Image (cartoon, rainbow, N blue to C red; front, side, top):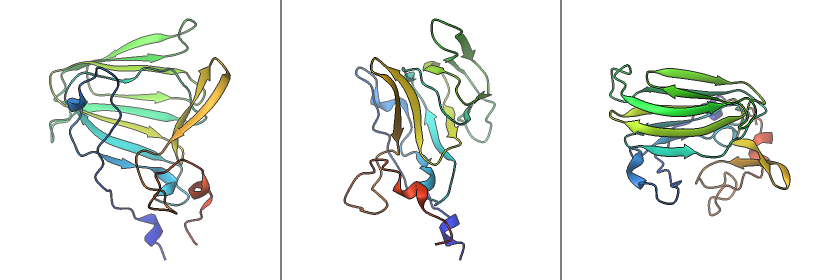
Length: 182
């Protein structure tokens, strides 16, 4: 009866590397929980990554309709306080009310709904950094200001569609409507 509430992580290899960035910035494989497409009815998604080299993770400002939490810990387990990195993170709209933060010790950042955030730049990594971006939504995405106006963009990662394994997920939203009891 409850089997839809249990999900075993598949191994994933992040394929998002910006032009000129070193593809070895993160330990492979990684684990991601992609929300409602993996556990029906879920309003949560999260990635589990260990960064080992500087990397400009998110260059574009955006916001969400729900809360997001960014977690930065030392990636030399079991001591998550063994942290030696400098990570730049911006909260607030660029050119208006932005504040730049330098994350240099284990930190969690709460990003309330509607708050602009990013860029997120892992500038210096002398010891591995365990990073999680946890969004309280059934699919990962954000609201972006484009020259053509506001645009909502969703991304479920390089995973197969839940309904057609021969197709890559295109975040159509069908899985978001699925009930865990059916």
